[in-house]
Length: 368
Image (cartoon, rainbow, N blue to C red; front, side, top):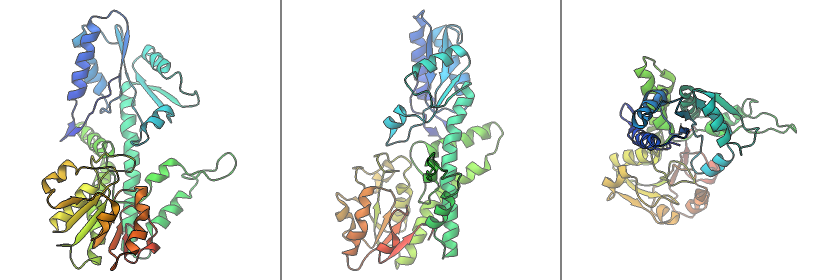
């Protein structure tokens, strides 16, 4: 199983780790007479297994794919923060291969998975593209909700939380269960407005897919717009701050959350980073709190003398003129009570719309 990182490097994904481990596997196969199956789990652009992995394996092993060894693609669909649960209870198994012998080997690998879990047998290139298409759909849903939020903000008397709740009630998103009760589809959680998506998958995979498609002579204007919309979320958040403060220069702003999502300490592509960078450019003084992240992201370490990392939630709020919520940690449900005890109360900007706006004396939120 090849399961190494494939970061996006400028105009394409970096396959150095894939190439290195593929050569090592090929070298190991050279001295083996028994048939083996090599499976790519890393997220790679469509065609990579066929055009990169197979030739390297054949070169290093001196053997022929399809005859002496098999090659497959088995993308993973794991949510960070609940990866073990997702692995043990997958929603689907995508089994990519060029021949039935590899498909059968992959079926045996997952024999313990209940038979009701759908299994899709397909070729390697299709399997590679399924992973990208799946992530692109989720990112598109997020940016769609954020564009609706911008319309709500411009209208002034519409709230994106209510709008999206009405959308969620559609049978497409809330079908009826076997007993007739409504069941909310998991994808509905991506149709909620906020300050943008981050992490090691969605931004990277969208950039990789649009760049790869461009190399094939194909424009992806919808996905290009999804990225642009996401990149603009930090500006949208600052636009909510400005009316509530005399000016951002010398304002004391607390940012709640560094991880790109709750239940992880991953700060890769975190929306908090561009928000903090913009606050610093505007001359604000920034204090940051996160329940599990104990070190500033690499992008902010050069500004560590201007960004304070608070040890506790109470400490982070103590001198704030404004508080910006970026990550949906349950710890932050204590914020209304803590801010209510402060005089004067700071402006609260809800970048995730997770708290009730009626609980704040001074409130601004995405899509209000």
